[in-house]
Length: 497
Image (cartoon, rainbow, N blue to C red):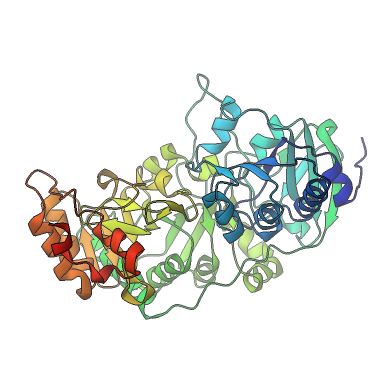
């Protein structure tokens, strides 16, 4: 059969109020762009006519303004999962205009197949190439594309001519069988390939191909500053000491790293440390620092779900695509984030905390316990199952008005049982084998900003006796003070006695 080329507006006409849509991509990488924009315009027109119009959105992770942004502003999103990071989407979630439920990224594809969230009406997939017989070469992000294409009644392809045909060969598309027929996932090192370089779908499902020529538009990371550099060096020196002590195998272990400025700084510092051998990565997001390390020979291979790199870096990759093709593989999120694989390979996991408490519990998602920031993403997939789990955070935020270390986290995403090491720009707290009170003293001594040392030591002194000492009347005093005055350091314990 031949492919039918249609406009973005015509593609949007196939989508109706209440439909559930599965999108390709993972972060802005590989996210469809034009059909979602046309869909937002349709929603605005329907609303102006007094007609209800909202859709349910399922993605691999966060997207971009082309998707989350325009649809949130058009009030066109009913239900949304899993991870998101756009300010307009976040606003809609916190005002309850969007019904958002947070989810580990490794769970979304299988939970969809299990039927937990209902059917998928339409899949919208960005592609570098597509053939009339239904063979799709995906773009820079995979996400949940295989699952939503399998489940969807109809598929719309965004054929993005910004993507070179030479990206064929970067992908490893594999979908596990569902229980009770699931077998082991035979990945034993990051470079192992177990699937297909293309996504194969029933061509009868493809109702149209929309041509585009739009880059992902990933913003460049903020340059490394003094704080992020110190965090990066602390991580690097800690892992080097573990290697020297024989607590990490001499050939080193694959790295998993979260995304963002701190993660980019950490990777740069690992690459610059002469005592750490050239390493491989098994992670979800391949970002700018990884590409530079590959060119330097410091990162030998990277397996991920997306190439979430800035425009100059993606242009560098595309201009030297043969060099990178045997150094990068892009997989579905349920494979990159799979707990079985993470446990087997012994990943060193490095993720960012929004806040941590003195016992090692970590909040990754909620500001002051109530306002959703982005979502848990894949941090839980890796943290619980890695060889060693590290969380990084600056000790303070907003010029010292927020302490990232608090008496008790206002929301728990990663409990103390899963957190091995906490690192700030001030130092390292290795929590392994420590009792709660030992953890508290170590975190306060090594990781807390000096302006909060006394306050946290005073809290610990007034905490009730027991295995994990807490004062339930004062454990959220930092958060209450921030809500009241905007400055946690103004806490006065006398007010709580």
